[in-house]
Length: 195
Image (cartoon, rainbow, N blue to C red; front, top):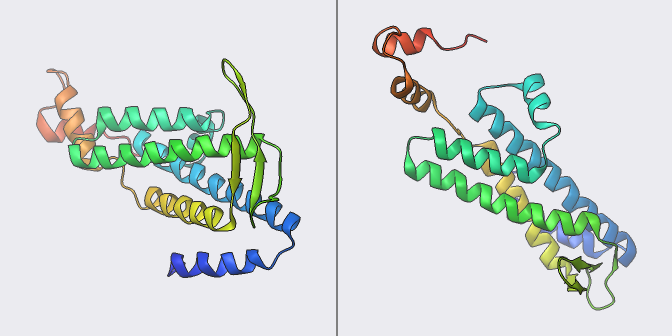
């Protein structure tokens, strides 16, 4: 997608043409679909941080909740990313992802319908933490498109991410190497997995 703003503007125009109930289901489905892509890119970033790929990564992340993935990623970044500026940037991406996770929980677990007040979706949200509440949540079409755009942008940022560079790995291993190991950088390089 060369120009995401233009793409999402065209998408909004297409959504506006749909019958209200069809539009509501389409918007919720679009959110869930874009969120699934974000979760996949977060999982890929986790794999990069852990140094595991495909089948191993799927085994590690398949049964983790989205929030568990975010927490694990934040911990790995805090522990293994050497450059503070890059660590803060990745952590900010994780915090943004967590907000989308909270939205996803509401959207995926709340009944909804075409809004009677707007061109979007009304969610019939219920909260029962210590008191039973029914917060209002009505997203206009423009709000949905904005959220979809932001979800897509965050997904793109995770996909472009180099979480832990080879230099971070080497620096960590040098700092953690026992005194009896091969000396210096040669020992660290020789100890790197080859798969």
